[in-house]
Length: 184
Image: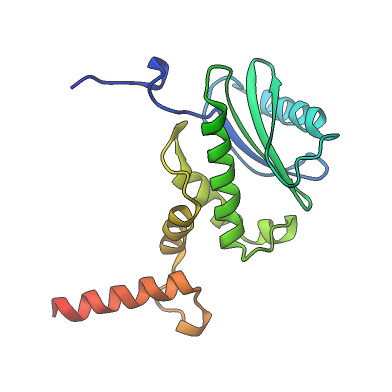
């Protein structure tokens, strides 16, 4: 069996995923590429992405921009700006599906209340989403319901009362209890 790497071009990959606020400041970011080796380079890239896309209207659907030989797919919702960056050779539709999967998973987990305050209060869920979508730059999953389900299972506290759990958490808890009772 042949070993394929991201460099071979066989694995869909992203360079970074950014969530910035309406002033261009970080809310949640993950870099998967060494294209920006220092924090200063990362901040500079974030600023240039924000400035380049600021005057566009990407509220209803994702939009695309070319910046520094990178493809940037982006979408704005209330006071949050979502970005996915890939190499110039990467498939734009794949990058768009990563962005949409991430955005939809965040929307599900934040119960349709996607704004900066809610995102900051649930930053752990957002980072878990990023971990479920991309690993070291390689795209693992783009289906929002699968991503949100995995994040809910990771985030679930089995000791919390059923009334305080989300539906997916409650189902996972019920499944766990059923499994335990069958194994006894």
